[in-house]
Length: 278
Image (cartoon, rainbow, N blue to C red; front, side, top):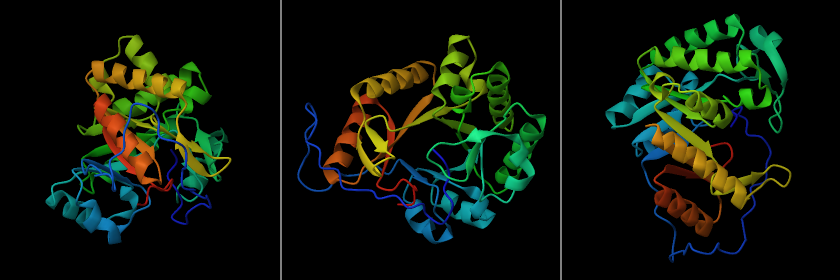
């Protein structure tokens, strides 16, 4: 996932027309979307009322005030702020100061680059950013782009991701890791204590998939679904809460994604926008 510039990227989200997958039936009418979990990365203060309907909300707290966050908490929400530890985005005000740490372009996301998480300069900045966001009253962080270790599988990158996650947990707050399967698998297989880096794992596109070339949503390949389901099962076995974000525009596909998540025991949010603004 990449946090989007408030000016949405041009992507056509076509209605999926594939046939229903076997083993999952759709009821008549629109699906009842769970209100446990909502991810709204392109939202702003005008969206507070609808976000307040969710038990757990992920937003980009850089664009909200402490009063905004408190309004959500008064409504009973647990509030996580997006925290991008593995890449730098050109629309962020801090981009020019850290562009020298870029490792390479982030495919499919214009204006975004992978960042050297092993750099002390970056790690110190992440710690400062965490304190800044916590001062707004958020309950924790939705940590993105730990996949930098997948694209740059070097020891110093692995250690950098771990150091930043440990630093976030060191603030005595909750942490959800978005993706990062290569890092998390290695960490768990080497006997790392999951409680020292995270409370939960989110995975995008377990049942569904994004076709960036066509600008459409569809079903995930069976082998990909099996892989990520096994990964989330491993996380759950290690005491981590499991979350998924699915992308679908058709009501049938939304219902199927929700049904699959419930069967697997995931907390699910289904979005019909890649910008996560719906």
